[in-house]
Length: 350
Ligand code: EPU
Image 1 (spheres, rainbow, N blue to C red):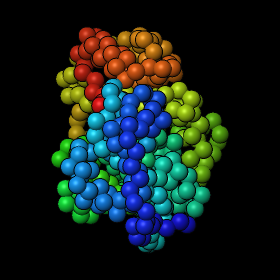
Image 2 (image 1 turned 90 degrees about the horizontal axis):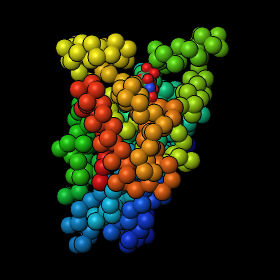
Image 3 (image 1 turned 180 degrees about the horizontal axis):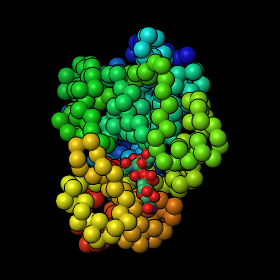
Image 4 (image 1 turned 90 degrees about the vertical axis):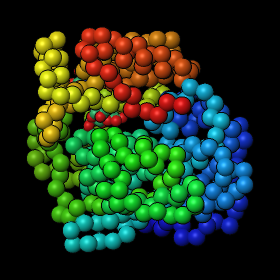
């Protein structure tokens, strides 16, 4: 098991000027960074804060670039998070606590846990992006959200350079949302995340596509490795691999509506996919709404709607961020026109 680096590396900051960001965003959109700093430790971040020039500059935190639409150059100091290391921090009676650096790939962490007999993250296999970005939008898939496995995190305050530790309540997790999208946006940078994997492990199989796998294979008590393999197969079958087709995962959040709004939409189309939530509201499947408006497989310029999942916008080759935004707006308008629902984009648009 690798350890997190304990002390600052002796080297100076690694700074690039005018660096291309095309390879650093999963949409593959063209954009250059005024300044790019490769952050390999919390100490690197403190150096940035204390640097006379970099300390004053506007900051842009870049993880895996998997939730990002770049429409122009980034005239800020890009902090490319490359803090590595995964370790089992503690084995308690009721949980394993693991810690990972912000720059570790999320899927790498999930695979590491499965390989080391530490179950609990397998439903979130193959989610693109880094560990440091995971709490920002409270990533989730197939019945589990990050908040369900979260212990605490460390972040560096970009004004003072101090380390702050936040627990789940302080992170204010909600559906694809956290404090890092609001009060702490641009103010603090996550360096390490600690996850809590409950013991004994209980598989989460309630999601329809997993129930189908259980029925198809006859494996009624799958282990974490089996669920990991199923999730990878399910995602590969319907989501494009960013290494092959540029994309940023789900482009819009699933809208949450009141019971009255839900009734109105069912009146417009009785087939609308909707799920009741605990608080009485309803979550609608944005992919279904977009599909119902006839967008699947369509393109505007070099940006398109993925053939197998209408919630995913793709770069058909050489698209600009502006083309992606034009397509997204056209989709928003048609969904609003037909269903009266305003879709909210999930990625950060710069
Ligand atoms: N649907 C359609 N047509 C489409 C796409 C979807 O009719 O083109 C229908 C499906 O048949 C299904 C419903 O819409 O009845 C929901 O689709 P799906 O199960 O694929 O899930 P989703 O709501 O589109 C969400 C997350 C995904 C996550 C999956 C699985 C959001 C915005 N997206 O997608 O997360 O992997 O559930 O849990 O919450 C991401 O955030 O980037 C992401 C991929």
